Structure formats: structure tokens, C-alpha cells
Length: 436
Image (cartoon, rainbow, N blue to C red; front, side, top):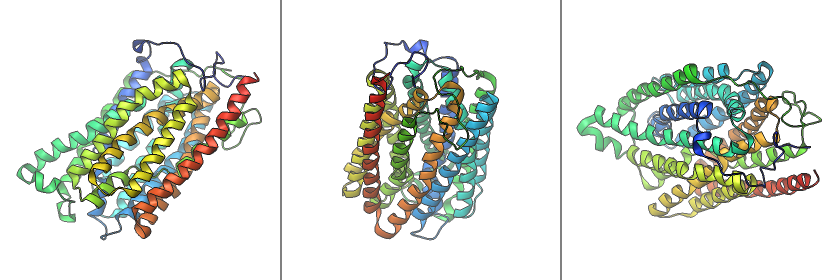
């Protein structure tokens, strides 16, 4: 039995042939990358400033709990919807409509965040924003995987993530420019300290303007993205029902999902990292934006190497390396005492994303046949999302009760456990391939 596509290659362990960039970065791969670029540009004009926006709306000292509640509920809901949307896209054999609808919903919901008057309202509209993400993600990933040969998936998914992170860099930088134009001589005082409730007007205007690049992304999808029919019988996996294991679906796929889910339990929102810098070293909006931009520059720098390395040397080695980096950074955050170490760890943290985001998704495609990938990605994202609620919520509670150091150390411990489970997955997968 082959779990790796039409050619049966073991992409987990075997190298791929040299590939020219121009032969891959075109058509749907390019259009989905551009969509991700503009969508994240829109999102990241808002997202890194939400902790400061919330802090200006809620009682002092309670912002971390609101952030944990917001991120946990938002990501869990989005991920459960990914299961449903993936299943529907498989049944309809149509991915584009759901993808477009999801991106449009997320863009419009950011407009409502600008008019929020309480912390709970921000949580609610962030939740609606993530509903859009839940609708679009699984069909989009399935469409992307069907638009590229199996041996180039790692690079294609990493390109998509790199464009995502590039948008996450340009979005905050655009925010700085807009805030400067809005505030003029008040710009530096505003950027050097957390805004109070009475000074949130500029952030509200910024959030309203953020929908412009989001709408550009939606138009790219509508006008340029092409529907791709799933390829039948790309592997010997026959059936899969929503939320239920099929007898013919390899057990190894669920072992892989188990390791990813445990890791997700310790993987709280990245907002806590920049909020940690704000709280511990007293950074204002400018410091938060610089931290966020630096983090995403690091992600962009490592995204392409991560994808290429996974295509060449195997997914498992690269994923394990990424998880090890995550563990190291979270342990480090638990003990740092200087601002310099915070910035160093933040840069290193980008390597974790580069080695895991696109590679984990590429491995899902390796294990599952084309006509069922919508469901597979839905299950993958849903399990991560189910873990996201306790991950961010518990992290926020531990932060509030015991301090950030304890919260970071707990996250590092769970990622270490996930690495052990993933090593077991790799052992069984290698044994299965050797018997074929």
C-alpha cells in the first residue's frame, strides 16, 4: 500500500529531484500565495495591536485572561469548522466557493472590531473573524495540494506560508505609517506607551482601513483562482466519513494527528510572546509592532529552507527540528531577564514556523488520497483547534495566577511529550514503508 501519492515515493524519508522555481510558483500556487499575502497584510494591521487595544478596554491586570479566552475560543471554533468545510468540499468536489466565502467573512469582521467598546465585544468579533478562517482553510489547502505534484508539495506549502508571513511583516509596517499620518506630532508619545481608553481612536481608524488589502485578496480569488477536480485513487485509501475513522485509512495517520494534537496543547497564541515583551520590558505599540515584524521576518527567512529540506531529506526530520526549536524558545522565555535575550529568542522562534507549518500540511497530503484531502485537512485542523482552546486559555490563567515563566515552561513540557509521540510515528511509518 502507498500512502504518498501517485508515485508511491516516501516523501517522509526520501529526497526529491531538483526543481526550478518557475515551474512551481505559478497558477493556483501563485494566486493562493498572493491571497495569503494581502489577507495577512490586512489581518496583521489589527492582530498584533489587539492586546494593547484590549488592555485599553478592560480592568488593569485582566488583559492576559481576555487574550487567552479570545484566542482559545476563536481558534477552536475555526478548527471545528475546518472539519465541516473540508468534508463539504470533498462531497461537492468544489473548493473555490468555500475558499472565497471564508476570506470575505474574515475581512468584513475586522471592521466590527474597530467599533468594539468592551473586551468581550473584541472577543466576539475575533470569533467571527475565525469562523471565516474555518470555512476557507481546509478547501484552500486541498485545492493547493491538488494544484502541485506530490514531490513539490513541501515547497508549494512553504511558499504559501512565506507569503503569509510576508503579509504579516508588511501589515504592521503599514500600520506604523498610517498611525504616523493620523497622529503627526503625537505619534512618538502614543507609540512609546500602551494607549488608554481615551486614546483608542487612532487604532479604530487603523482597523477600519485594514479591510482594503483584505478585499484585494478576495478579488484575486474571484478573478484568478481556478477550480481543480480531485484526482481519483491517488492512493489505496478508499473512504473516510466525517468525524469517523474509515477501516481503510492508515492507523499511522491517526498517530501523526495524535502527536500534532499534543503539541498544540502547549502551543498558545503568539500574542503572548509580544505581550510578554510589553509587560516585562514595558514596550508600547512601537515595540510590539517591531517585535511582531521581526518575528515574521524570521518566519519568512526560514519558510523556504524548511520546505526544501522536507522535500529533500524527509518531513519527519524537519518537523522534529522545528518542535525542538519551539521547546528551546519557550524554556528560554521562562527564564530570561534581559531585553536582548527576548529579541534573540524571538528571532530563533521563526525557525520553528519555517520547519513545521508548511511541512506538517505537506505530510497530511502524503498520507491521504486526493479525493479525501478536504476531510483530512479538516480533521487535522480540528484536532489542533480542539487543543487551542485549553492551550491559550490555560496559558492565560497560569500567566495571571503564577506568572508568565510558569506558563512558558508548561508549554515547553507539552511540546517535549509531542516529540516523543512523533518519534513513535516516524518509527512505525518507516517500518510500514520498508514492508511495501
